[in-house]
Length: 307
Ligand code: 13P
Figure 1 (tube, rainbow, N blue to C red):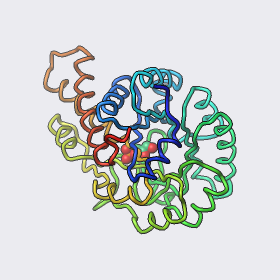
Figure 2: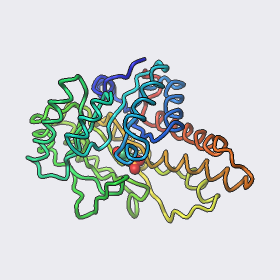
Figure 3: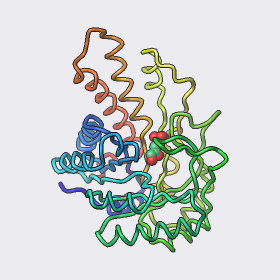
Figure 4: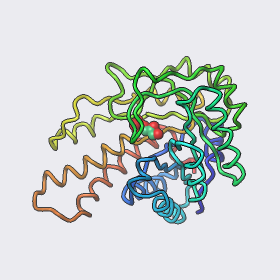
């Protein structure tokens, strides 16, 4: 069916107390793994395109790929711009047929963030597209964006209320302790659940959690078994994700776990079959592991059977 609107999918999720994963795509195999798993599990899903993906594969190419493939599945699929850098980027995504855009002006002071977000909301709403914006700043590395600990700060609940009111956004990304990438900190990476509860009582629109990969042990094991040297990667614990959902988290972004799954499959074939040079064999195994981790995310977030 045609792409779904972000707001429709997330309003329902927050109302009914489950979350919808937003998976980053860069190519055919990742998109196939997401859509085939969503269809099989009757789960609504977001597919998002980052700045790095746009540079690697092209915004139009990815948009055409996702829209075409989504037209042949019967669950709601939202095509989302992840971390739109500015107004111009948001307009490009609107023109390319995205049904949800994120404007990330969170590095600006509050008033400037409000102003930049307002402009994007006006443009996107004029053509019926939903908008996500961010308040607070996550630590970590994601494609071209590197945020140091000193530049990261958590979302203030009062500011969150004012921000949503002033901008008219459809869902709000908040910083509550998660971070992008495969190294989410020494010891136990945490979610500030008390802060989340305070935000959820003041903000009634769906909340978005970035930096939510779990870096599961089975993927770490597979990577190590093929000689990967990742040091000591850490992710968000499943019980923290589960606990956040009843407090308004309705969209949960996952990129790192997909990267690990895809790489683990490719590495397994490359390392185990020195004579193999058929790219379909290499990528096919990666796609199989992608499906496995995607299924785990739908189950974790309560998305199965919601379509
Ligand atoms: P992870 O790096 O934890 O997968 O987070 C991805 C993300 O938040 C994309 O916006």
